[in-house]
Amino acid sequence: MQGWQAGATGVAVAVAVVSLLALLWQRPKRDIDVIFAVVSGSMALSLMSPWMDGAPTWMRWAVAIGGSATCNGFWLVSRALFRGEGGVGRVHVLVAAGVALLIAGYRGATLGAHGAVSPWASGLDSLLTLASSTLLVLTFLEALRGGFASLPHPERRLRVAFLLLFAGCVLTTTLMGALAGTWPWLASVRGGVIPVCAMAMILFTHAALWQRRRLPMAAVDVAPETRATPGPLSDEDARLARALRRQLDTLQVYREPELKVADLAHRLGTAEHKLSRLLTQGLGEKNFNQMINRHRIAHACARLADADDEATILDISGDAGFASLGPFNRAFKAAMACTPTAYRAAHRATARALELS
Image (cartoon, rainbow, N blue to C red):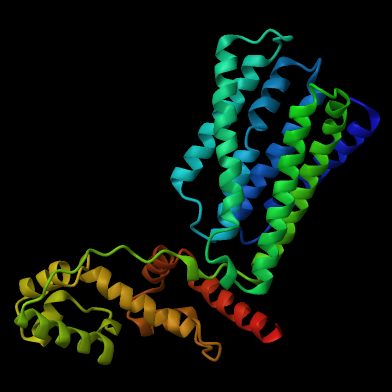
């Protein structure tokens, strides 16, 4: 490794380590802070791999395994960055972990190979290339989702900057690697470009996290809950549906914490099983509790989006009909993919951004 390459790599490793320590120090930690901490540590180890020639076998294995959460880990970072809390689920973590196992397996298979690559390693390389390319494309597409044109100006600027930087780094390093066979001197240049790109992505992501704290992801692009297609209503069911809408929209019975389907059926003057059948077969609701919670969440969202409403989250949850804060937080995050606090902050930050634009 040439002197300038070693210098660039050393600086990049230092930046990655400082990033890891800063994220570990962060309080409170969000999902993206934890994910990016893992990616920062993995980047540091991956950048150190050219220095492992002649190192003990255990050290080379540690670097090979620890440095396997880079492109796959950054896909998770992009999901958390552009989807907000809840954007990374168990399935996504398992996919990223599967790619990490492929990376670690390939690197382990080529340790000490000295140019002789086994068929097993060649197969892993092909599979790894396909998986990594797929995740790189998905990472790029994350910034394009969610009604790009309707986003606030600061959010659009963030996403455009991400697209330009990410695409520039990936295309530059990929093209250099592909052309190195024709122009061998590109391999030497690429060895210095990779740590520079790694530094740029780490520093940019920290800047994006800083902006995200100021402008959290609003839940405006969360897909609405899928409901069954309502069936045709008889005259009796249509009258019952109108009475039900009056109870919900005008009287707001959902704000009663102990409301049960039997209570509402009694007020409507009908049997409990008839009301339940109307909800599931006639109106397309999954069940009574989900319908009530949907109205409660909508009521809470309206209050949280009101810049003049200074009530606490606890007060708003009680006013919406939740008996305690815990169930409210869980139901709200499941429906809106963010916490009530983040939802309120996002709407207020968006309002301020629109006032300044």
